[in-house]
Image 1: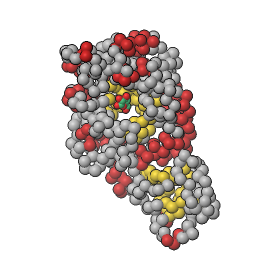
Image 2: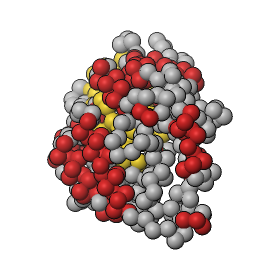
Image 3: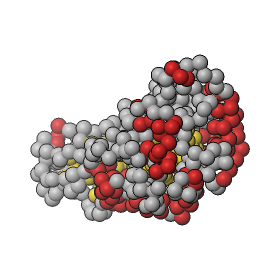
Length: 446
Ligand code: GLC
């Protein structure tokens, strides 16, 4: 991993937690952002959503404040998704929010809201476009017209598409001030890398936005991280890996075994775009623990919301985000700037670490005293509950003598009794050690 990427991604890796926002015309049919492809709809069949689009409640400040309340440090909005509809005022198309009843550049308002609230701002941009006439259709893996014989012998000019796509990216990187992150989506089959003229694209982006952080999907996608994981990545390999809906068992490392920046993207229910019948929401407890898991493996989590057709984030998502925020408010110190602990994963939960401070994330009520695996009793300086700063007492086991190398703490005053966890979701113990043991940790981090 080169130094330039390390420096560029520093804020990102410290931030750890972001909000993904999938929003567009597909919030009207309300069954996710792939509806056009799933139902194999023609552009004309999809058009009524464009005519209908009227997000009367759109107020990005509300979204951004909610993200902040949840403890998120950045937000990424779909400026354009695969359906080709733009939430920004592109001069290259009329298929954009300014031409709908909304009549406004919704990306601009979003970007401004993020800045006003001091949140880092990112834009998602689909390099796939099911609306553009020069995008491959018949026989493509997922184009809505993949089975439509009418497009079988159609002549397209893919270069024209690339010009359009590059032109739109240029608009995004030149018309909206400094962007912190660009999330391109996605490559598949032979549609990857230079097929997108990716080197040119990145050079152009970097000319205007030298510090912007870019994902790895101009080349990689669900089926591979791309060459970001090689020792000599390409100019378009990206700054971070983007595993989707699955936390990599051991984080993401390059060929040399060195940890590289990565971000799990995940949904709150089972859809990215608004879906009015999907109520399979993950609990705030689960999401807190998944965030901790990402951090404990050196990665980030970007958690999605799919606002509805009026522009409101679903109530369930709001509730869950506020619950996460309640936990973050007290425990964020164990997340921001934290990463892999040099201690092995304890069976009752997880460890995160920053410098020589260890955070024990305890999920399971211990039977008797809690063993702080990996920490010798004489190395323990003090242990407090992160949520309120109060002391955690030393514990003992009936047979402590059998475990001379493990420090024990008690969640109550009796050193051997069993006590409930103060926070069932994740009780965080802040552990300060006598001598620092930062060496391995620093090596992993940078
Ligand atoms: C996917 C999907 C897409 C979603 C994205 C988020 O590749 O195509 O709908 O936006 O992942 O990671």
